[in-house]
Image 1: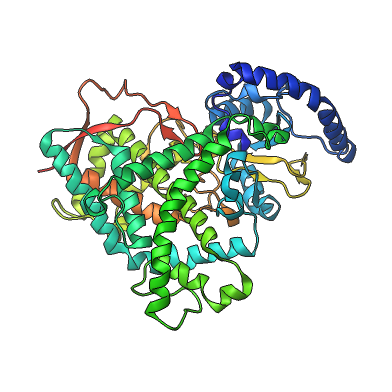
Image 2: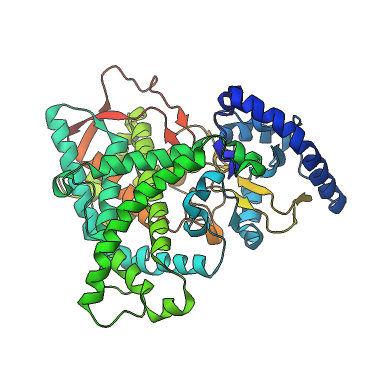
Amino acid sequence: MEIIYIYDLYNMLSYFLYFILIIWISIQAFNLFSFSWGKTTQHHHHLPLPPGPRSFPIIGNLLELGHNPHKSLAKLSHIHGPIMSLKLGQITAVVVSSADLAKEVLQTHDQLFSNRTVPDSLRACNHHHYGLPWIPVSPSWRNFRKMCSSYMFSAKALDTNKNLRHQKVQELLSYVGKMAGAGEAVDINTAGFNTSLSLLSTTFFSLDWADSSSNGDDMAGELKEIVFNIMESAGKPNLADYFPFLRKVDPQGIRRNMARQFRKMMGLFDRIINKRLPLLRESSGNIATGLRDGSHDILDNLLNYMMSEENKEHQLLDKIAIEHFLVALFSAGTDTTSSTLEWSMTELLRKPKILLKAQMELDKVIGKGNQMKESDITRLPYLQAIIKEIFRLHPPAPLLIPRKAELDVELCGYIVPKDAQVIVNIWAISRDPKIWDNPNEFIPERFLESNIDVKGRNFELLPFGSGRRICPGLPLAMRMVDLMLGSLIHSFDWKFEEGVEADTINMEEMFGLTLQKAQPLRALAMLRM
C-alpha cells in the first residue's frame, strides 16, 4: 500500500535527514537494484513489464506522484496506457486504470491478487497479523469474513437493528434542529462521525460513546482524534515503505506513532472486554458453541465464540484478535461514512436544483413532517442516484487497498512480477470519459436509467472494491449513508455559511487512507415548513 502514502513526498525529501538517508541508500541499494532487476529480466525475458515513465536512480518514480497520487497516476495513464509500471524505491508497482483491467485483477485473477502489500505503519502492534483488511487469505481471515457476512452485516442482522439506526438518525436530527434554532453552523463531518460512532458502539457494546452525558467525558472527541491520527500516520510518506531494509530503523517514527494510537484505541476495547468476560462466564454455565442471535450485542457474540469448543479446537479467535478487528472496524466505519456524508452535502449545496429535486422526491414518497425509514430507500431512486454519483466522484479509497501478486501473472500481454504491488485506480476509472459523459460533473441523473450499482459487480464503479476482498461493511454503509443524507435534506433546508459561495467553496482533497475534504464543510440548517 506504499503508493497511497506519498502525497507529501516533496516535503519529505527536503529534510536534511532524508538527504543523509538517500546518500546512504544509494550506496547500500545499488547492488540490490542491479541484482533484483537482473533477476526479473532473466526470468521474464519473454514478457515485458508494463510501460511506464522513466525513473530516477534510487528513488525511481516517487517524485512523479505529488500530493494527490490518484490524480497523478490518472494523468500518467493518459500517456502510458491503462496498465503501467512504476519503480517506487525498491518496490515495483503496477497500476491499472480501466474497468476491463480492474475486472482482470479483481475477478479473473482474484485468487492471485487477493493479499495485500502491508505498509510499515500498519505493522505497529502486529496489526497486519490481525486487522481484517490486511491479514492474508487464511482460515482466520475466512472466519472473520464469515462472522461479518453472517452475524454483523447480513440482511437479517441489519433488519434486526434498523430501529436502532432510526433512533440514532433521530438524535442527529435533534442535534441539527438545536443548531438551527441557535443559528449556528453544523460541522457535517463531525455530526456524521458522532452518529456513526454512536451506532457502532451501541450495536457492539450497548454503550453510546457519542453521548458525553452518559459516559461523563468526550468519548466521541477522543475517538475522532485517535481515528484522525491513525489516518494521518498511515497517510504520511514513509521511507520504510519504499526501502524495506529501513523498517527496523523506522527513521521517521511513523510506526511508533501508529503504535501509540493503536494502544489508545485497544485500551478502550480492552477495558470493556475485561468487564464483560466475567459476566458472560457467570451468567450461564453453558458456553455457546458459536455466534448467536438474540438480545446479546455483537461483543457478547464474539466473546461467546472465543470461549466456544469450536474455537478452542481451531484457535481462530482470541482477545487480541477481537481488539484488532474492532480497531479496523471502528476506524473505517466512522471515517468513511462521515466523509461520504460531507461530500454529499457539499455537492448538493453547490447544486441547489439537484437538492430541491431530491427534496421533492422525499416529500412525495414520505410526506413532509414524516420520518424517513430504511424501508423507504428502495422507493427513492433519485436519492440512490445521488449516493452513487457521490461514490463515483469521491470514492472513499481512490486507489482501494493495493494488492500483492502472489506469483508471476500475465496481464494484457505484460508480466506482473511476484510480490509486485498492484493498484486499481478507481478514481481514474470513475472519471474515464470513455465510460462517463461529462465525467467531472455532478449529474445524478446518469444513474436513473442505469443498472450500475456499487456492490462490486460493475467494474466502472467500485467504491467498496470487488471479489473476495470487497469491503464487508458495504451493506451497513449503504443503509447509513442513504438514511442520514435523506433525513437531513428531508427535514431541513441548507445553505453555506455567510461568505461562502457555491463557485468559491474549497473542494480540495486531503489524501490518505481515505479521501477527506481538506476544508471541513460547515453549513446552516433551517427547519423545513
